[in-house]
Image (cartoon, rainbow, N blue to C red; front, side, top):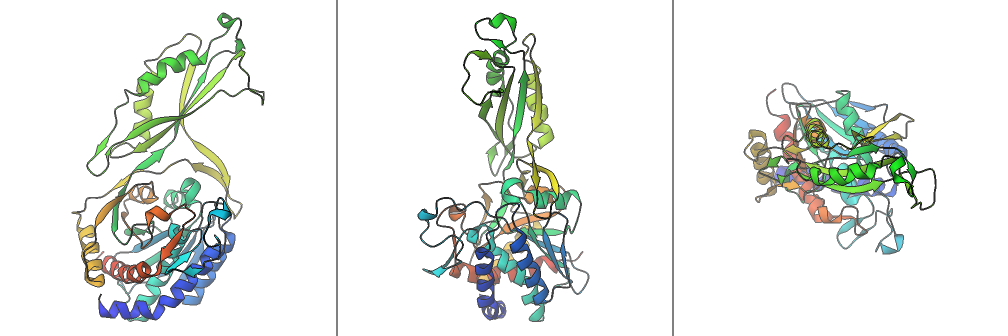
Length: 404
């Protein structure tokens, strides 16, 4: 490892581990991040960030100003976690932050609180070591990623605290992540006329439309990407809502709703996805039946009381491993940690697409392991954190010293 960066990392290692433990001990499920947000705010102020700001949705941003002339770098992790599930399945209590077997254990350790602790300290370590980069560094701890990518989505929609580069702290095993498939949830509301099933000719059955629609959906042309292959679309749910809470089998439904999971790559933006699906819908005709296509949003209220609509999905993200900034990032980390690292794709959707849609150059980096996210084995390796701390120092320094 780079001996200078290794020394900086060693000096702050215990404080970073303790911060990760404290983050894990604060149960911060989506829309309930208030306690961990207060902790992050206090920690950033204690460390001496130049600015600490909480937006109206509840995301926390800390700014460390550079010496001037460099590119701005954002680091992004999310404060929210998924539910712990069956507590009896956990080897160590899910909100203990316990250190055992060379790891920190607990919900969110890998997704993304262990990495968040590193990100919070990174610009402070560089400044204290006399290695302040030229560009500003913004550490972003966002809300509601798990249910809607909402914090980053609204940050980008508001064009608030956007940077030239962004490092997303989703699990990558200390490799560089250069892509993730997007996800959207198109749904089709098919409306006919309800009637008693004994006299079907008096109604218009939306299931007749559905029967013709399903084969047509298989004709939707999928985009392709050299990193991921083609997009995929799968029908995942069909509802026939009625006024009754009981199973009703003798009524022709007035409405059928078809939900799809569309995993996006390449140029399959949400608008393109909608155009493709609408094109095959336009080929289906059933007398007395109409169909309308939408993309799923749902109402939500953040811990600050902001009421908005969460988007069920994320935009796709992909960058070539040959891009100059990717090569610079890879070289900087390799020189610091003393061995080769890989560039690879995330298997899941991430917030990166929100930022790339605004022209931010994105990359992913984290010592956490993908296989542990959302499981009862949620934990992060202390040894991998050691390397990740050094990697973050090198990565942020390299990108923020890039001339504007």
